[in-house]
Image 1 (spheres, rainbow, N blue to C red):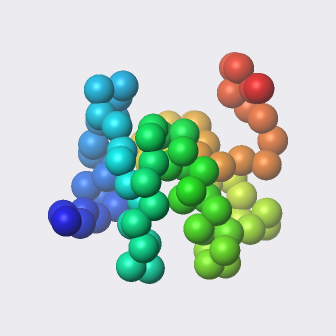
Image 2: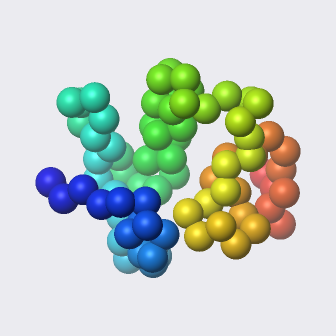
Length: 80
């Protein structure tokens, strides 16, 4: 398995042709089908580990262009 730095992730382009297949943390692999499921599993892991809480929000997306990965209030054009 290849690991990469946060700087490497920031430079990557993610699109509909690239799909994740698992989330690996703490020696456990969790199968995921798409980006939405990966995000849900990842956020749950962040909460369980105490890395994220309401007072640490918002969390910007990897590109840091004004969008958020996690936010406490809806701010997307399609808020639902």
